[in-house]
Amino acid sequence: MAREQSQSIPREQFLTMSVNLLHKVFLEANRTQAKSIYREVAEGKQVALTNVQMEDKSLVRFDLALDHSEYRGKLNFGSFRDSLTVLLAQMTDALRQEKNITVFTQEDDPNVMIFGVTGVTYEEGKPSVLVLGADAGSGQPSVMLKLMYLDHSQFGEPRPQVAEAGADAGEDQDPA
Image (cartoon, rainbow, N blue to C red):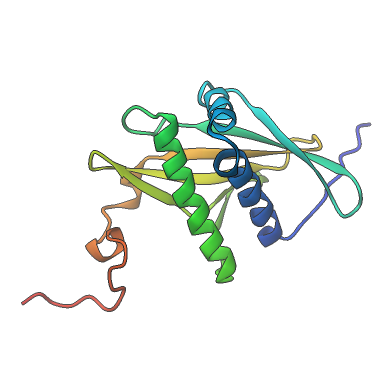
């Protein structure tokens, strides 16, 4: 009988590790290295990012995949990096402010999740929504981080004060 070992870490710690890994791979690394990894995941390949030693001294491999099937337009490295920068900034802010981050799980497998923080960017007036998901339940000593572009229409149209950076987030006022 196969033995499945489960290592549970707090969600905030997991998200912090994930944000740091993605930042290191795509934003700290030189452009050539980052673009090489981007090309692989953009082609549908899974890329091993690193091994992380857990508190119990076990090693867990972190892999990365990208689903850009809902991206509108032609995705290139610059657009991807812009989306990722916004997503990581939003996640970092949420973690620093100790916000309760919504997690959406798959009905039949709670180890497959999507984190409810979005990175929204605009290209030629069209919004793109990037989110981070994870699959920690494959029975392997690995975690699959999955960056996914979602169909922006499922979020509705952004309100002007939300869509514009630096806009006052106060109460809506009647223009009349």
